Amino acid sequence: MNKVLIVNNPNAGRKKAIKYKKAVIKFLLRKNVEFKSIEIDELDSDNIKNADYIIAIGGDGTVNKIIPYIINTEKVLAIIPCGTANLLAAKLEIPSSVNRALEVIEKNKISQIDTLKVNDGFSILRIGFGYDSDIIGKTPQSLKNKFGYFAYFLAGILFALRLKQKKYTLFYDNKRLSVLATCIIVANAGNMFKNLVSVSNNCALKDGLFDVFILKVKNPIMFFFEFLMILFNRKLSNSKAMYFQTSELSIKNEFITGHIDGEKRKFKGDIKFNIASQSVKIFSNSDIC
Image (cartoon, rainbow, N blue to C red; front, side):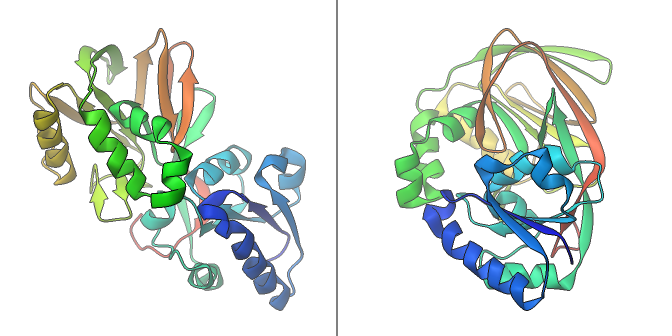
């Protein structure tokens, strides 16, 4: 390993990232590796271009900001998970312990994974609208700092009590679909809590496809029932929910607020999704991504 760029999010993991950065620097010094360290706000193409390896210290949002600079290049990404959810790290079976995460780098096992292109942006995990977006975008940072990922569970109960339907028009596989939905999830990686809970056990990171989930019901009890059916991999389309896989999708949009990999986003104009197959090189501890 040579020419390493450390990208640190100092606010991640209740500020564990500051401690984790010291451990990463000690690791690289022991390896006699040339490196540079920047904070996430300093990230730009000039800092990236001379690096062969990028070590991201942060969560899924930190990784998402790095992806546009390394997609379809020979640069290799390493993750030191230090965010609220760390879902990509969980999918790649990268431990939350900084020392064990560094061991994954030492093993030098590199996977090539898909990236989901969303208009002019990118997603590794998922994009959510409606209920899923409300949980991610409206959960207070103070609650996340106090309870970590469990804060999303608390917010999920609250927002389920005030579900709202919105009309969406989707185009995929030469089909047109108009639907009233309370939640739409477009997933490249389906895990929603470590690797224990997933919207799709078949949602692989290098299959050239993404998964689309549409929940239509407003009744909180029926909503949770349908959502549980998805989590238990019983994804049968019916009058209350839909599921399909595709490699291209567009959603007609007047004005939608959603999230990309846990970061709130306002979308203007129609939203187009395409898969960039095996477009990112990343250190992994998993045989099946």
